[in-house]
Length: 272
Image 1 (tube, rainbow, N blue to C red):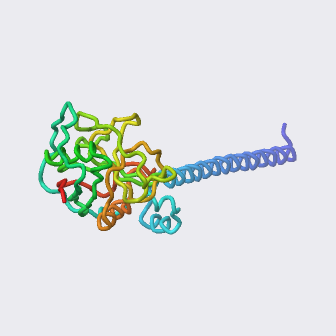
Image 2 (cartoon, helix red, strand yellow):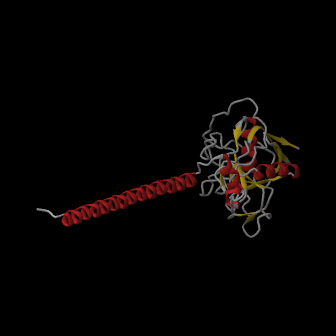
Image 3 (cartoon, rainbow, N blue to C red):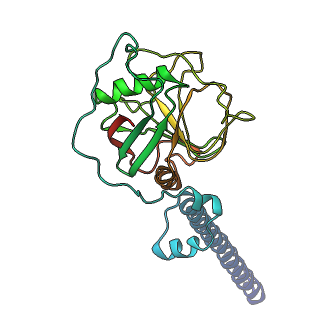
């Protein structure tokens, strides 16, 4: 038979066990709660980092971030297009199998006028020093070959040129024939530098592979004397060219399509 004293001790032991169970349960709940809080904080932190690195920000974040933008990020932003809408018309796709017969007067003075969407670029041609090149330009201009074509390439790092004369706009088009290299010892080419204002023929990197593509130098450029220099840009033409260059190119890497929409509305060669 259980005495009164034994009964008291049993009740006290049961009360103690219940208290221990409650404390254990409370501690367990606290651990679970803390674990959940830590998990939620982790998700918020990871989510915040993901949003930041992916650039998905609210307007306020953008305003704050703009104050911390790096110079390189600002440099790659696209400049406004300084040029007008192109004249109506289509690019001609005619090609020829042979270089045109010589028809210019090598002793005469010729000018190539490029009426572009960005302004007029006048070029004094070197007929006596580069007769094949000038003759080809006279032929192609008279055929309307350059009309409505885009200047497809601008370089802004290392060399500083605007390249034009490709009816396809891809950098691989031409008139179907090639012309010989000329005037590679022009007195203007010193220390392998094509000075600002020079107009020269582009080629494939091999000798005598010039066609219709040409480049206009807006800043002194280090190049091997492998590209026929056949013209010099006027002072007013240089202003137009520098305006085009100031708008930059599309890739941000120093070589790509110009941001300016440079279209040759009309190319004309005149004898003076």
